[in-house]
Length: 435
Image 1 (tube, rainbow, N blue to C red):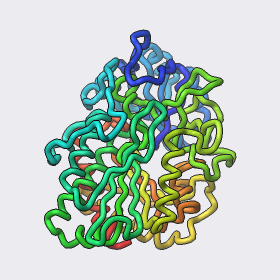
Image 2 (image 1 turned 120 degrees about the vertical axis):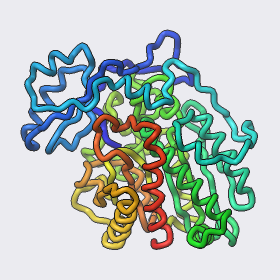
Image 3 (image 1 turned 180 degrees about the horizontal axis):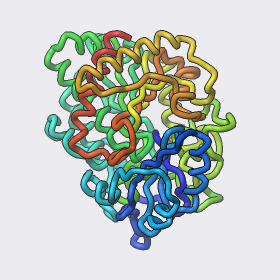
């Protein structure tokens, strides 16, 4: 969920499944990543204004202590002449992207327009979590894992994206049959560049299914108590675009009638507190563009309808919107820094328990808090909608690894997928039986 700023220099790319021959993918070759010590909020605001003249990408808005920024090679001299207090985090962002794997600039992304076009293959194994994969491969993974658990699962086509890709939910249930219990509901890859969220959601899914098949006592009790609805990729167009056009793309790929800039921030488009001042942008070129109206994107329209059905059916026990990065467990609200959820103490108790369980694995620290003020103000977000409209008992955004931008940030090496996923699975092993 961490934001980039200073992006108007990036040429908008057409909304298509393949990169046009007239376009040039953005590779970030030669971009250098710096951490600037701001020495306080007031100085940070001054430094941000200084940086606005650079061809650069800023990683963070919480600038009380530092600003992390990737500077284009042609502006490195200008940046260094500013004589700021900085350290170098990454000598070449483009090289880090290539080392991560999964980015194929200018490539074509084929995708199935219907789940019926995909035939089940072998049941997946844990080698899946040692590399990043294309959107189409993720769809195939869902088909394969559902086929290996046919009596207790189904695939649901929630809707389609602007470019026609399927938004797929995997529904899991236990001994009482489907639709018998409250929902445990997960969204991944709302922001396209946050690849680790896809993999962590799928790892948790894999552990639930395989452990249920092994008659694991804890997981059997959990799946016999809740219906799980799992959507590893809710922004399929943006996700596909990060693999062929711009690894750091955040929004969906919706075209706007009055602007050449493409995309809406789906996590500013939910139809609740959408019109609240601050926490989103009315500019189509902004990374936090809220859309032309509340819930006007194809993806959010579909997700709202699906969420309303879950809320009306048996209710939503818990909702998690998986993001990266910062290692935070965030309760609502984003629209206000003064309001607290009605069951604040209970949700915080559970969040602290999850953080404690994660810490026991590799001493990794996750910090519980509230979206605002502990991260930043954000309106039109999913967790606010789930809390107040969907009436979820638990509504969280979990910001995954790493804790800061550093040499990784959104570009987390594939070698870190399994460690990150195992950390969060430990957290879920606490939450799911306890909530």
